[in-house]
Structure formats: structure tokens, C-alpha cells
Image (tube, rainbow, N blue to C red):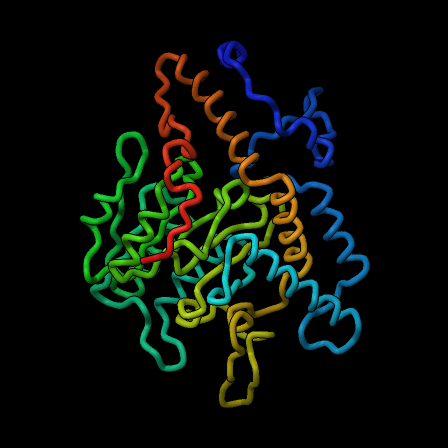
Amino acid sequence: MAEILATAHAPAPLGSPLRAQFPILAQHINGQPLVYLDNAATTQMPLAVLEAMHQFETTTRANIHRGVHTLSQRATDAFENARETVKRFVGATQAHELVFTSGTTEALNLVAQGLVHGLDGRAAAIGPGDEIIVSGLEHHANLVPWQQAAQRSGATLRILLPDAQGQLHAEDLVRLLSPRTRVFALTAGANASGERPPYEALLALAHAAGAITVLDAAQAVAHSALHMDTLACDFMAFSAHKMYGPMGMGALLGRRTALERLAPLRFGGDMVQSVNYQGAVFADLPARLEGGTPNVSGAVGMAAAAGFIESLGHHAIEAHLADLRQHAVRGLQQIDGVTVLSAQTPSKRHRFLRGARRTPA
């Protein structure tokens, strides 16, 4: 296989001048310079992110929001500034709010569990007889929470299956949508195959049918310019460790009206506005969904990672990845017995959607 790949024309390495920005790559593994290929699982952190987190930990570390001392106020500012930076990075507007989480998995669980529990005397958003649709391309972090939500609520889970090439089609979703569809959850990029489904069109169809729409953007956030302001999307989840940021950090971005429907996963700490022996009054968004001491350093690192990506440019990163993908596909297609799914470059297949800043239906 190595010989076959070597015969194909390799793309110009965008990563070469940037290698020095990633200290972990300076080491040798088994006597060879480290070449790290597991970015779909976890990306490495560049100096800009490491330095931002180090700066916070060595000059600003303190509990946020309720402290009146200088470090607490600095830390609060750092945390809330990081929130605004990440919101801008994914195209949020005043109609959106961002909740920091431990990652995409927690964010998706927050949505799934939050929708099956009523809040403040209101009925849950999902109940018996309702339907939830997820695609067959999902990471189990966007499948198992919905399986559990269906079991706990009495709803039915339906699967939007891909075709033999691992691609999803709008007409198949149309056949699944019904007046009972309450949720449609979809990946922006399949972790197993790299397939980039036409999520803009699929989300718009589900939104038009009255469903709550959820986008797992974990595999897209590092290289695709996400525009929440143009998507028919109620919730978007993503992780810092997929976008050159720290582990244990992520976000749930949602329309404020949608976030208001969620029951919190965690109770106590900053999510409480006031409390007595008989009950509690919960804080407003986003604090109500961020119970417990937050990972402030992680938020700072996540914001720095967003800045790092923007400094390179989404277009440059996507173009480079498309070249690498096609280089791998050409080599794999020369191996007998290997079938390549989603062989066509996603950015080319869905070029008509790029930059089409459509207003949700």
C-alpha cells in the first residue's frame, strides 16, 4: 500500500510550515519523526492554545461570577469573552446562546435528556407516540442518547439510512418525516467514512416539518466554516479537542427559544439564582445549563483554538484536506478488494451549498 500511495501525486503539505507550532510533533516514535494521523479522534494543540491556557492558569485562575476579588473578576471576563469568541466562530447571532460542556457527547445528552423532562411545570418536548429521526451515519454519541430518550419518553426512534455509498438523500428523509416527528439529529461529518452529508438541506426539510433539529458538528468544526445564522438548526454540538483545543471541553450552541425548553442535567452551583429549604429558582441562560465549577481554562483554550483556525482560514484548511483525501482515495482504489465509500470529495459534491447563506424556512 505504501508503494501505491507513493506513486500518486502527493498534495503540497500545508502542515509543513506549521509543524513547529505543535510541540508534540517534535518527538520521535520508534525512531521516526512523529506523523500524527488520528485527528478525527483528537487534534493536537498548537502553541497559541497552550500559551493562552498557561497564561490563564498562571495569572488569572479563580472561581468565576460570584467572587468580588480581582482574580475572580479577571477569570469571569476571560470565561465570558471566550464564550463570545466561540459564538462568533460558528456564526451565532443575538438569537443564539452558547453553553459550555465537557464535549460533544455531553452537549448531545443535554439536548436529548433535557427534551424528555419537563421544566417548571411544563410538559416535556418528547412524549409517547412521538418520533425521533437520526441518520445511519451517526457516531454513537448522537445515537445512544436518542435511543435512551425514546425509551424514557415512549417515542419511536427511526433511522435515515444511507445508500450503498454511505450517502444520505433528501427524498429518503421526506418519506420518514411525519406530523409526529419531534426531533431530527444529524452529523455534519461522519467520523467513520468522512462523508459530508447535505446537512443544510436535510435540516431545512426537518425544520419545515416542525421538528427540533440537532447538528453534531464535532467532525466539521475544525475545517468547515459553520454558519449557525443561516442553518435551520436549533442545536449545534461540538468539541474543543476536535479543533486544536483541550480535551474535556465542548459547547452546545442553540437558539435561545430552544435552549429554554431544556431541563438541566446538573443541579447546583452557578445554575441556581436563589435557594431555600423548599426549593430553588434557577438562573437565566446560559448559567442554568452550566451547573458546577466550569472548565474556565478549557474555555480560554477553545477560544484560542478558534482564533488559530481563523488565522489559517477555513478555505485553505478545507482545500488541503480535500487534496489529502483525494490522494488517499486514488491510492486505495488501486488496491484489489478495497471498496472506498464516499470516494468523491465532499466539498466538490456539495459545492453548490458553499456560501449559500440561506435563511431557514
